[in-house]
Image 1: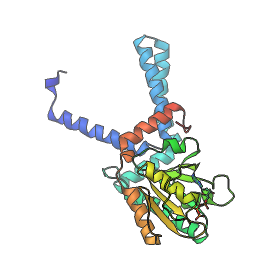
Image 2: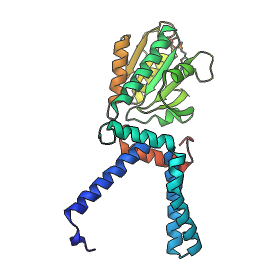
Image 3: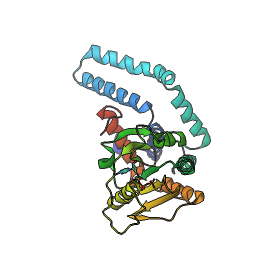
Length: 275
Ligand SMILES: Nc1ncnc2c1ncn2[C@@H]1O[C@H](COP(=O)(O)OP(=O)(O)OP(=O)(O)O)[C@@H](O)[C@H]1O
């Protein structure tokens, strides 16, 4: 078919299909199904090469294998498919913006965890990564890439556990790493009451645009550090507001293409290893 034979309906068709692929990929990013996609792409690539080289038996086997995926995929990925259908039912597949429920949930989990640490006088330091990558900080720490939950954060900071020393670094989607060693501030004009936890919080916000939330074990208060400066002790409502603001902030890191690229790099690097 020549290019000029294309009807306006064909353009509409292509646009709709591209949009559907984009939304489905968006739902898949960060799930187990991405590993399957990697497998299918590798098999498809081998199949294409076999076709070009006219390796008939190999292309026949690969053709059959890809056909079998139609039956295998719904069985293996029943939970993911159910989630996708639920999202479709809630209308999230059509929304171009991010999921507000997720943003609220993460903000609530983080603020609840820090409030609990405060009430129990458990020292904690959470660094909320923004556009400046903190790879240098977390690459030598313990990688987690875990969902942001109150229980996990409390367990990390619980005194005596292997990860309680050091900082937690998170991004808008997950707890990236724990037990991170941060650079200390060089400032000399800060209160002598501030020990190394607070100095580390100032240090990381001087070298990046991150936000650091500190729970003081001695004073039982929560403060936020931004650009090398501390806030006054935060109330629960103020803490929630900061968390909400952070998770709803449209940073470069939350950009879908960046997330997809990161996911693909991770998949090709062999899973959850340090990059
Ligand atoms: N460079 C660092 N990076 C990350 N965390 C650090 C660093 N240095 C110290 N910490 C954390 O701070 C803890 C020590 O806190 P310290 O009592 O010295 O600080 P502080 O500012 O007085 O805090 P608090 O008010 O909670 O006592 C360490 O156990 C460790 O968890």
